[in-house]
Amino acid sequence: MIHQAQGRYDEAVKMYQESMKIKEELGDRSGIAGTLGQTGRIYYMQKNYKEALRNFLLAFIIFNELKSPYKDLAAQDIMKLKEEIGEELFNKYYEEITNEQREESNN
Image (cartoon, rainbow, N blue to C red; front, side):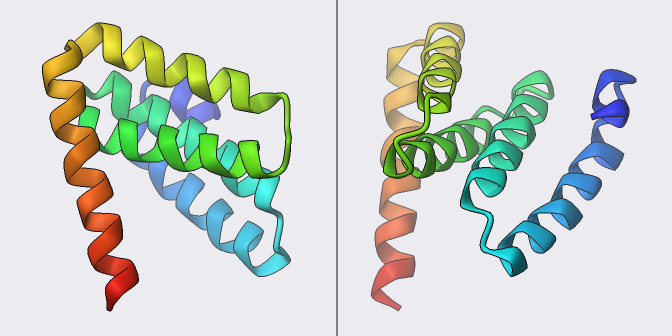
């Protein structure tokens, strides 16, 4: 988070990816969702809106499954992104992401 606060986004993403590996090994689903949310915020700041949406959606799904109150924060991130990019682009990215997920699950 320090790299993120200092605007060193590439380094922050790298550190979050390392953190994600550890959380996956530990089975820490809440930690995974939190890391996805933080990474999504970096992508949002970099205007990489599709990747931001992908991360926010995954964070929301996990928090929702865990019945975590953080699902509300993830939902707010999604809505903020939608307001930023508009409904048309949001829907386009959403459709692309869900189609990619379907293809991955079919393989």
